[in-house]
Amino acid sequence: MNKDALKKIENENRKPDGNRWKCPYCTQSEVKTREKEPTLKDLMDRIIKMDNKMDELNRKYDEQVLLNKKLSDEIINLKQQVGVLKREKNYNDQKLLESNIIVSGIPELEKKEVTNVVIKLAKKLRVKLSDEDFTCHQIGKVSQDGKQLIKVKLHNLAHVYNIMAAKKIEKVKAKDLDFDVDSTIYISSDLTKYNQEILRQAKIFKKENNYEFVWYKEGNIYLRQTQFSKRVHIKSLEDLNNLKN
Image (cartoon, rainbow, N blue to C red; front, side, top):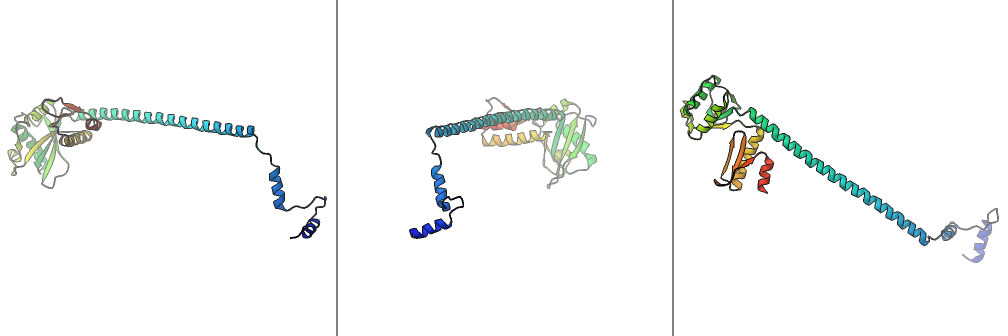
């Protein structure tokens, strides 16, 4: 476009107030040119604001880290308290079962015959027992091989101790109780579910870590590595984990 053509466009688009017409691009360029360049002080102020913002963010981050640590410590403390309460409850529950024994390996029989079987069992163990010294009943379902469990609640703890001591000496077979089969009869303490799990895990631990002994006595579970080492009282599953570490 030549000079005369530009002059003509300018005259045709001259504003009523007499100002020259300019294209939008030229106008925008002039505005940008007139913008104030930032001074060194302006730049320093911006840097200071950015530093203050960064300090504020770091402060909030540190506060959150401390809060998280506090919450983590509180959670650990609560878990420890729950563990203590759980062990206390398990101990009290086990005390309620200390006069019970569980007899397993008994062939299926009628309900009315259970008491007589228990008396025969005591006689075989040479423990004097009458039907007034205990109550008993069948528990659980009959197994696939026709065996069932009997829970016996003895009224005198001395009877419990005598039976548990005698069973280590005298092995009892079903034939000894006038059954036609020759299966072995087992006698064990009545444990809480938690103690059952501890004992089960303790037996696994014994096998995997070359311990020689694991046993339950009067509400407590113990491990011993050799006959010459000290016994270890296992109160919880955490105790077993600590032994592993």
